[in-house]
Length: 105
Image (cartoon, rainbow, N blue to C red; front, side, top):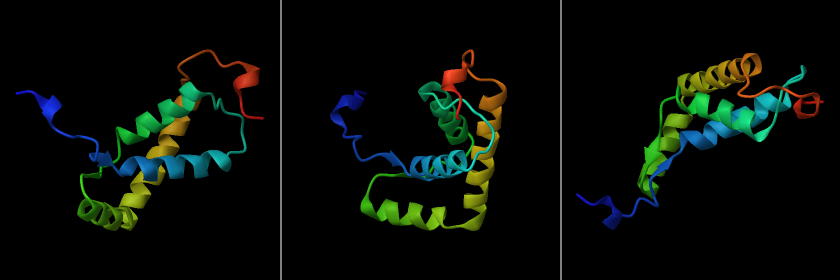
């Protein structure tokens, strides 16, 4: 089977948008220093996306389903908790040596 003949352009994981919005919100509210380099922030996003329930869609109708799922309080709670855990994991174990200039001021 050759998948190159199929159009995967419309295959989207809507949970990524929710995770990135929540990550941005939580990072903006942090009071203690944290490395916010590209590698660390991407690690936080990836860790979170590996935990939360994915919400894939391929059509407009699918986007309505995912919008409904994202509004459920238990899903929102799971995203908030997963983001918080990912931030703490990266804080304690960054993928590189933390330098003063990379830390949040």
